[in-house]
Length: 215
Image (cartoon, rainbow, N blue to C red; front, top):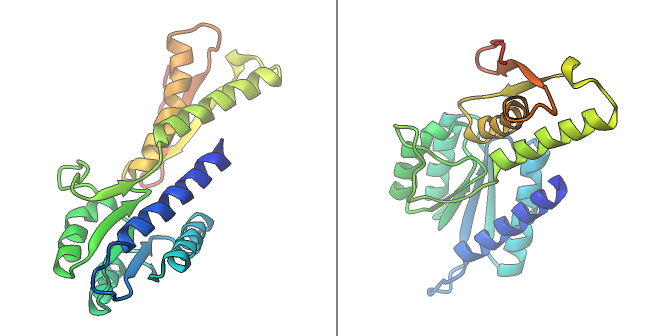
């Protein structure tokens, strides 16, 4: 399932790039920037690779940029404006930079699209005007929770002696929603069913390490 989801995401990304690149009426070769927050990570390397396939097939220039923090991100957007790029796809290091990213894209004449992590406004709400392609993080978490339960049963473990630990990062919605899916599934088995008495015993956040007992 993980591989299927990953491949589907890459196909959709390539399709989105093609859509952004087509429709030129002046005959000029299009330029599209692709900014990612962790260029060394395999996930983003794959996204760049599929974007390169789309660029070769549809005849546009792909400009790959790594931006690990807000300052580098804003500089990258200005850089694309200087290069007269037509659009940009971003996976930002901090989704709260949404308003600044939108403003910079407009200032530099860039069509804007986000992937993976959705841009949010000052109230933490998704910025609807920005086209976004992401993943169903919560459902992925539920699948992980189900896989844990299946593995517990397969190993013949006593559910009364088993607990689940979740690692999450509240400032990143896709990470937080994924971990919500996993423990929520486990809590559900505790609250709504007596078949599995699995307890979520720890909730760990990367920005502030904390542990809490949940029944």
